[in-house]
Amino acid sequence: MHNDAVWVRGVTGIQLHHTTDLQDAVRFLSNAAMALRAAHVRTGDAQYSDLAAQLKTMATEARTLESQARDRMRHLHASDPARFGRCRDGHEPWPDEIQPGFVPRHTCMDQCLYHDHNVLEAITQCTCGQPPCRACAIGGAPS
Image (cartoon, rainbow, N blue to C red; front, side, top):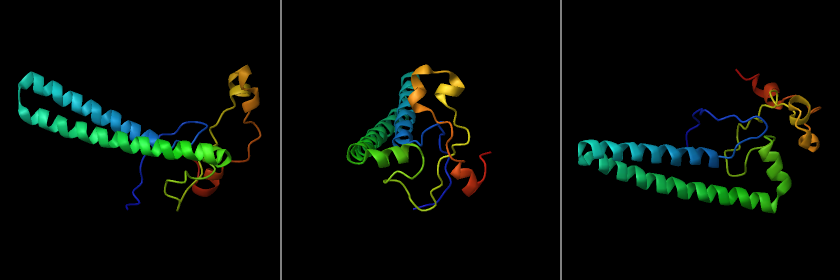
């Protein structure tokens, strides 16, 4: 296993599960396969269709991995909703992701839907008065 730094898509208010990364992989592989099939149609060159077939197989495998990860996430939601909430909110890592070196999600940029955006239906989801950002305390402010 490598400890390479990777870019993680940030979404204000939640810590994404790696199913999002797998969804991206399926989408990117499928788009690449489609582009290669188009190149094959334009050129008639079989090497494009051969590579497209390989990518289609990889996309199918990635979709299977995505389904398995999603099933694990749903199981956590059903079996331990409180822990699911802590993981979603970025207070602890998802159980099927690397635990060592976990840094909580940056909450310093979070905004309250009710107070900051005047979404009246979100009054029960007010995030005002949350404790200071733990991620900034551990690893410094985001750049």
